[in-house]
Amino acid sequence: MVVQVAEARHGMVAAGHPDATAAGVAVLQAGGNAVDAAVAVSFALGVTEPYGSGMGGKLSLVYREAKTGRVMVVEAMDEASHHLVPAEFRALSTEQRKVGAQTVAVPGQVAGILEAHRRWGSRPRAELIAPAIKLAESGFKVRPAQVIFFRAQQDKLTANFELGRIYLPRGKVPVAGSRVCNPDLAQTLRLVAEKGADGFYKGPVAAAMVKALREAGSPLRADDFASYEARVTEPLRVKFRGTEVFSVPPPVSGGGVFLLTLAALDVEKPAGGSVLTPEALDHLMRVFLEVDSACREVLGHQPASREKWQALLGADRVAALRKQALAPATEAMRTTALNSAVTDEQADGFEAMAAETTHFVVVDQAGDVVSATQSQSNHFGSGIVPPGTGVVLNNSLSNFNRISGNPNEVAPGKRPRSTITPAVLVRDGRLLAALGVPGGSRIPSAMVQVTVDYLMFGRSLEDAIGAPRFHAVSRKSGDSVNRFETEKETDYRLADALKTKFGWNDGTDSETESFGGFNAIEVMPDGRLRGYADQRRSNTAMGY
Image (tube, rainbow, N blue to C red; front, side, top):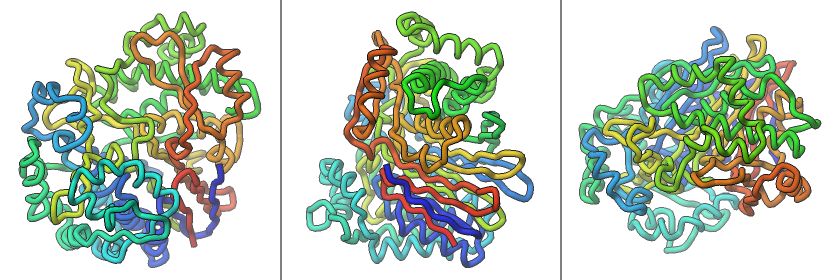
C-alpha cells in the first residue's frame, strides 16, 4: 500500500484529512506549539471526518514534552450516565445496544483537547478553533477514500433526519470533490471558542443534546454533561529493543494489549528478515492472542486495573504467556486463554473490525509531540445529531460488557474500554517516533505488527506501514482453531502457509480501508522530521 511521505525541519503534522493537516501546520508556522496545533487538528477532524470522530466522541492523547522528557496522557473517554440502570441496559435488544439513544455516552473529546490546551498550550483558544469553524461553514472537500464510508452508512444516514440533512446533501451520498457544510456545527464550535468546555457541556448545546436524547429514551441528563471531566494521568510503558514505548492506560484496553505483546516478544527474534514471513507471523499472532486474552481479564474502568496489568509484566507471567502462545495450537486452545475468551453474548459490545476512528500526530520545532486518537466508536456513532447542534453523537455504550464481574461491566458513571492505541517511542532520551491507527479491534494488532517490523526487524516506517496487514481474531467460546484476517493485497502464498503449515483459519478481508490508515512522524538522526500518511485512508502528512 502507498504511504505518502513528507519531510521538514521545523514542524510536522500527519492527520486524516488534508484540511485538518493544513490547519495544524498553519498553527505551527504562526508560532504555536504541538498542543496548540493538536487543538486545531482535533476540531478540524471532527468536521472533515464526521463519521470517525468529533465533538460527540472520545479522545485519548499522549503528550511528551521535549524539555523535560515527561510523558503524560489525557484520558477523555466517553462516560455512561450516572442515571443508567445496568439491568435495563442488559435487557435492551441487540439493535438497541448497537445504535440509537441508548448507546450514547457523555462525549469526552471537547473536554480532553481543551484540558491539554489548558495545561500545555500557548495560543488563544479561539484562534485554534477558527479553522474548524471555517471548514464547517464553507464545507470540507470530500476525498475519494471518504466516499466509501458515506456510502457504507447510507442506511444510518437516512434513519435520522438531521444526520441525513447534513451528510446526504440533496438526498445523495457525497461524491469525491464535492463540499459538505455543517453550519450548525460551526455555531457549536463558536460557543466552545468563546466559553471553553462550558460552551459544550453547559448551556444551549448541552440542553439540545439532553432534550433529543431524553425524548429518545436515553438516561443522560444535564448533570451528566455538566460534571464530565477529562483526566490527566501517567502512561503505560515498556522497553522494547532498547526503545521506550509509551501508550495509554485503562480504561483503554488497546495500549495495554499493544505494550504487553511487545514485552512478550522482546526476548527473542522470530525467523525471517521481516514480520511478513509465515514463521514470524505465526509467532507474533499466537503471542498476541494470549496477551489479548489475559488483558481482557484485567483492563477496564476499575481502580486496580493498572496494577493488575503491571503484574502481567512480571518476568514469570510474561514467560508463561509466551510458553502458552507457542504451544501446539490444539493444546493452546484448551488452556486458560479459552476460559477468558469472548462469546457473542459476552463480547465487548460492537466494536467492529473496521470501527471508525482517526489518529493524528504533531511534532513542533522544540521536539514536543502529541499522538492522539479520537473516535465515535462505530461509523457515525449512534446515528443521532441533536437538532441545532451539528454534533454526531457516539455509540460508545455498545463497547460495554454485560456480564457481571467483568472489568468492562456496564455501570453508571463508568467509561467503556476501547482499543484505541496512540503511542510515542523514545530512544536514548530522544523522541524517535509517534504513531497510531484507526481500525476498531484491529488497532492493537496493527500497532504490534508495524512496531515489531520497525524496531525488531529494522525495516523503515514507510515499508512497515505500507506492508499488508494481518490481524489475529480474538477467540470465541467453541473455537477449535486460531483465525486471522488479512487484506486482499496480501500474497496468497503467505496466507496459505499460515493455514497449511501452522493450522490457522483464513478470514481474508477484501476491504483494505477496514485495516485502518497509520499516521506517524519519525525524527531522523540529523533532526529532520519525516511524516508518514497511510493511503488506506484520506491521510496527509505536511510540514514546514
